[in-house]
Structure formats: C-alpha cells, structure tokens
Length: 79
Image (cartoon, rainbow, N blue to C red; front, side, top):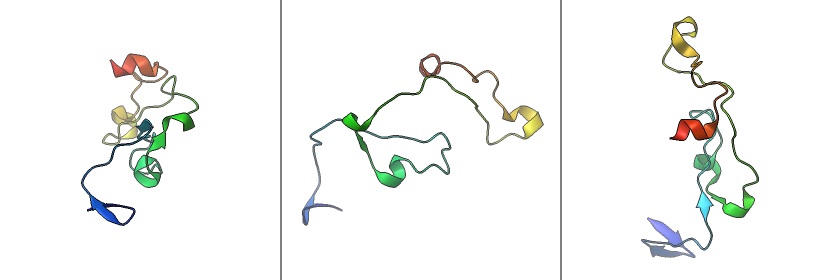
C-alpha cells in the first residue's frame, strides 16, 4: 500500500522528471534502490565510457574481463 500525507492512494504523478540511478556495481551499489529517485535538476553529468567490465559468472583467466566493452563509449553500447 502507498500512503501520501497519511491517505492511501493507488497513483501519484510526479511534478518533475525523476530518474532511477544505478551504480556500476549492481549487487553492492548504494543507488536509487537505496536512496530513491533523483530529480532531473540534481543530475550534473553523464557517463562517457566504460572503464572496466567484468563478468561475475566467470573466473579471472576464463573470460572474466570483458575486453570488448572496455574503453568503449556508453552511447555505442546502448544501441
């Protein structure tokens, strides 16, 4: 159940654009899942490139480091 000012509701319309921010360490990041959505006017930058990309299911010498993603622009990985 969701309550706004003590009254139960089933919907809410945000007055500003809000974004969900995710950390680069999905399982251990303190991000929007921890502190909530971020208003658009609080965003001061954007990611430019991937510095390091690891596959959590692989071992160090068996493909853990994803070299094909390193130092690639974020825009090239989205499409």
